[in-house]
Image 1 (cartoon, rainbow, N blue to C red):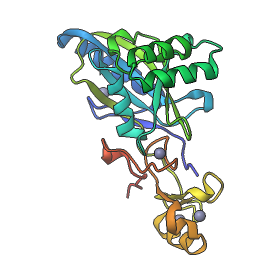
Image 2: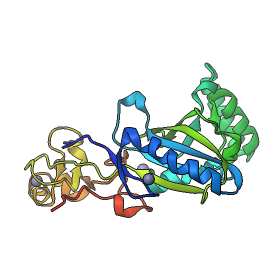
Image 3: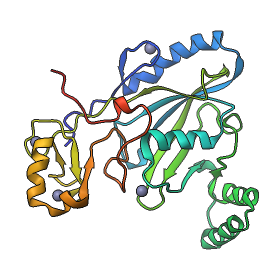
Image 4: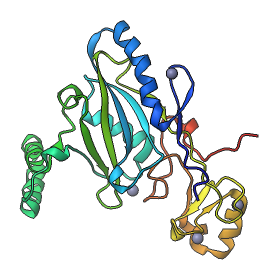
Length: 264
Ligand SMILES: [Zn+2]
Ligand SMILES: [Zn+2]
Ligand SMILES: [Zn+2]
Ligand SMILES: [Zn+2]
């Protein structure tokens, strides 16, 4: 159970904490200053969140992305911080460029092109039919202020995200992709004792009333649920992919990836 749906993130520049709805406005004041100092180029402030078509969410990332990086670099970053479990496929899509029709015929043509190594033709077909943005493309040739891109990781047990370009700047970013903020670990509460922060979940009972456990109650749950002992125990992590497939946490920004810790 989510104790508190409050979502806050720290600003990388000044260390201050803001609620989700204010963080990007605040970050823009720093980037305005950067726009006067950095060398000329292109860069973008991007908000990443679970696709809002599935309801509002407390998870977010604020990224400052340089125009010279490629879409595949953003893909890799999202995998590293939030998604990668077993190297599933992924895609960026511009929903405005999605066409109706095509369907299976397109799918088979696309697979054939891939099998023959005709990557360019494959990307062209996918872009013209599905609005899929080629991952080889440079960010500067894709993004512009106000653009919303959908992103899907794993077309089976998929995690669907939305990227929104909040602002663009006529300067280079400090690095290819800079993590300016993310939500601090959410306060998941143990479903059993309803006192301690949850650190594990049982995927057999996923999302019903009793699936999240603190360390102590997890030991008790293991006695009644054989699956939990064997394979169904997963760690609470700071990602919208928590508890899905084999996802056990990211490989970057690990300090903010674990379970919520009570301040004593
Ligand atoms: Zn700040
Ligand atoms: Zn997986
Ligand atoms: Zn407990
Ligand atoms: Zn269980």
